[in-house]
View 1 (cartoon, rainbow, N blue to C red):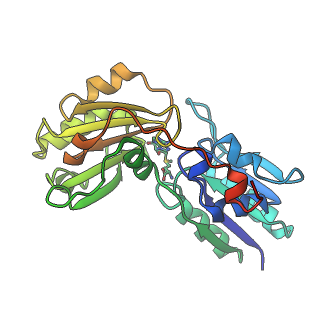
View 2: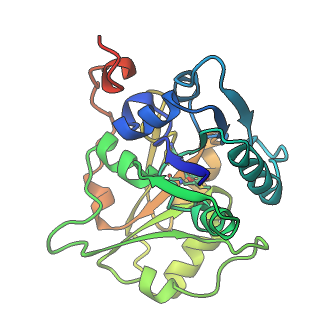
Amino acid sequence: MSRVLLVSAGPGAPGLMTVRAAEAVRTAEALLYDALVCDEAVALAPERCIRIRTGKRSGKASMKQETINRLMLRLARRGLTVVRLKGGDASVFGRSGEERAFLEANGVAVEIVPGVTAASAAAAQFGFPLTHRGEARRLMLATARTRDGALADGGWREAADPETTVALYMAGASAAAVAERLMAEGRRPATPALAVENAGRPEARLVRTDLAGLPAAVAAAAFEGPVLLLVGEVAAQAKDQSPRTVPIPVGRLAGQGA
Ligand SMILES: C[S@@+](CC[C@H](N)C(=O)[O-])C[C@H]1O[C@@H](n2cnc3c(N)ncnc32)[C@H](O)[C@@H]1O
């Protein structure tokens, strides 16, 4: 039976890929990778591997989902080891459900390799927890927009709960609408809030603000990389400087020796 691996590359720093993810890329015969995947992860693929970039950033068009699905199927049916490499965790806003359903419906077995999502990377890098005893007992990973680009209708009451940490993906352009909606549902305007660009990477940027100040802070930052918004009491614990991490060569993680 043909097989496709839906592999999570983590937030864009090679050291935050899992060992299983690195192994999968090293054995790929066909690699379809998204825009947020770092070059070092793609470079793990063997020289003879077919590499297909499926996503572009900065408003440029990405390959259509239908095209990606058909490509994966065709390559798997040729008997190749197909790796579909995605940023963060493939199961968090990564369309892994759609891809898995399509492949399985066409007789292709799917393995999903989990990974570090942007919210976990941001929390680790800037020293704040996503949950905290007595302060944040719920974590909501959410996107503010629906498929057609409108602001989502549901879920705002839960997001306004003072003990909920809300991590908002794909929300940089919606900061004003999000803040307004959360405050309208009763979330305190002074609730600590963060915007984190390029979480997990050496060039990561942290902007600290509060819910009322979030739209202006995001606008002033003029982010160019991927941005995660985070609202909740735990954000007050964020440190301005991320600690220096000691680099670990990916080759060693992937079992290639130092
Ligand atoms: C299609 S979603 C993919 C999320 C990914 N699967 C994950 O688990 O992180 C893309 C959005 O994730 C967020 N994102 C992904 N990588 C990020 C990073 N390194 N830093 C900040 N936000 C990131 C941004 O909100 C971006 O618009």
